[in-house]
Length: 523
Image (cartoon, rainbow, N blue to C red; front, side, top):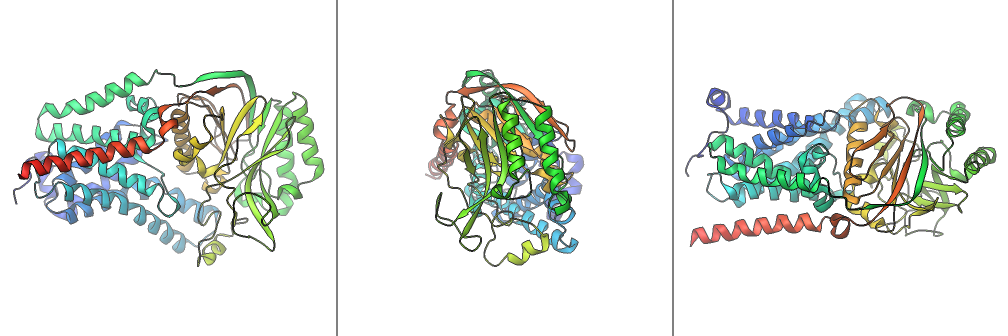
């Protein structure tokens, strides 16, 4: 078997990378480095460097198994650094004993690292016995990375957090591809740019710069394109951030304080549409004091407006929505956004539930008992829920983690004119989760050509324009209201029309073209 035809590192570093363990160490360091491409740093070019290193390590591997080991190391470095907030949620906020919280976080990161390992194995395996790099290696690396990342986004209900494409929010020149191919198309393009740059540097052949140049130019040319247009009159919105710590939220003696906090914020910040975060008050909707709801309705009436309140809701089993599990004796519980005011009362109930956080996988009740998590057994509201008709706009609500699933968000289009996310981010403490979640929401706005309004408990409460830029944002871990004017938008981006199918077809075509090229070479 011929040796690699290019170095995987400058000659000065070669002695440090002579053993496989050291090469895996470099892969882990590259994965950790790649975290900096995401929020809060958002140094998008770091993704090109980190994934470029991974490309060289994968392509120069002697066997697919060796490539998989390097991919696994990359994943461990990346996810242990990038989703460290899971430990914060389990231990610091949830109260889980340290050894179990650490083991659970490590287990999750190990599971997530299987996907980079599988991508590396697949890319090296499909490249055959040839270890020489070239256009085929670039195409295989980008396509297999994207396809396995897409699989991570739906397998076992999906965990698409830190998908590579999220690193390319504006001002990255690749961001213009988001309305066309979505976040997975961005992942494909980013991996291709990284591989092309790395191969050009390692082989000293400038021809490999052609693909990165084309992709960057294409993304940049699409950035100013307006895929949607404003509709309806400007709307004054108030997004309330109560900043109530999770440890205090469910204490009975703090119940009145929670009610008072949001009544005061709503009273001091009148608006046409006022949005409270997910589970803003710690009680079922039908158990809230009539005085509290009456005060909110009166405040909304000042401007002939409406309120969206995040609250758990209960109903008799079998009365509404799709079939779901019964969470109590004859009752089902929903994580809901309930709208009321001048418009008739309407409700959106969360459709994509989070395992362990909102429903209990069989055999894992003990795990949630260790976290002391209230209201952790909800029923899905179903996928085909209409937008909320409020203030002359069609408002597509999504709750917390749901906005990481771009293919599901577009189901409300073209009818929806505004996207609204309600989140209780207090579960993640002071961690990377808040800025990372805001970055994800920016991609949803870009993909759909719709403004995204985010009302959160502790941060980041924000208003995002249809081009993915931030119109306004509240400082995290502060109590306040974000008040601004927004417009609804209509029209469909290419991604809203075809969803993830465009990126999937493109990746599959790349794999087929590589297979045909290999077949011709073997004849």
